[in-house]
Amino acid sequence: DCDEQLLMTFKFEAPMRVHQLVFDGMKDSPNLPKHVRIFVNERNVIFDTVERSLPTDTVELKWQEHPSNPDLSRASAALPKTTYVNATHITVFVVDNMSGGDEDVTEVCGFDIQGEPCQGQGTSSLPKKG
Image (cartoon, rainbow, N blue to C red):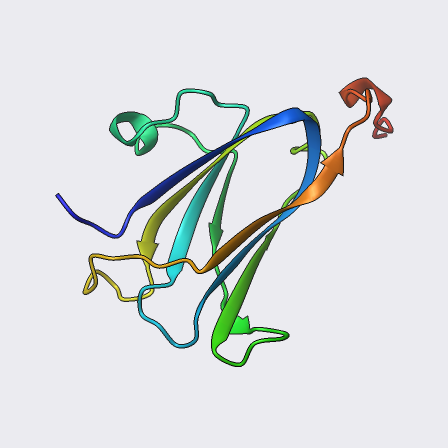
């Protein structure tokens, strides 16, 4: 069975504070990811359960000109900093692509998770609201 969905799981060596996910793909391709669901610290996200699982975030990617390569496009997903503190796992589920169902293949040329190690800081060190 072939479809446009992708499931990517990343495990970090140390807890991370994740700020942004960055996708690169071929310019003007209908095979670029469109909607992604992001799961933080969910260790058992698989294709059989991902559609029924509640994601941490859902993002519609907005593709723009790549800053340094005219043959590529780039989409970024800025993430709420307080939600992605102490991340040990990130799972990215690409729900569909820009083709609207006409293409069974989704293509990503590059992917980057931007953030930094928490360095022993837990959520208790975040400022209190109110």
